[in-house]
Structures are given as C-alpha cells and as structure tokens.
Length: 101
Image 1 (tube, rainbow, N blue to C red):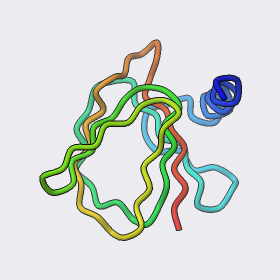
Image 2: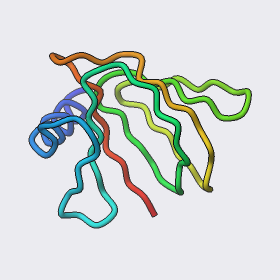
Image 3: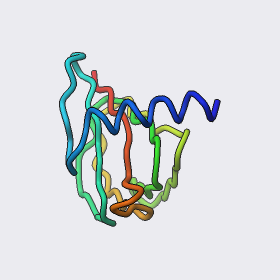
Image 4: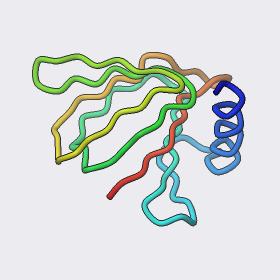
C-alpha cells in the first residue's frame, strides 16, 4: 500500500508544480497542492478526495473530521464545509487527487 501511495504522490507532484488546484487531462480529475497551512471555506460537490501527503481537518456542521496520507473524504451531496490544512510545508506540501462527479 505504501509503495502505491508513493507512486501516486510522485505522479501528482509532476502534474501540480504550483499551489492551487490543477486540472488534468482526465475529465473531472484534479490535483490539489498547498505548501502552506490554509483555511478554506467551500461547498463540496459530490466528489472523492484522496490525500497523498499532509493532513487536513474538515468541519461539517458540528463535526470535525481529520484525514491524512492514504485516507480519503467522500462527499455524496453538496456540503458546506470549512477545511483546514494543518500539515503542509514547502518541502512537503499538502497534495491530493480530487475526483468530482
């Protein structure tokens, strides 16, 4: 499992060399990359985010969900959330794949 995660991380790093959301050639697949700790208020669309490096807290209503490398978040409906990237740096940025419907 760790070997596969490392392979995916290397692919994501090649696709997203700058902070932000990067489109890929595959429809609905994006790469998220952030090298600094950041708070993001957003509405999740139906999607799945697989985190490859870093750690993120997601607040939905009164619930706090934390996930890290090798874990994922699945949103089955439009959800208002606050996301806090809590582990990220220039050397080891937050990186994940985002697949939306």
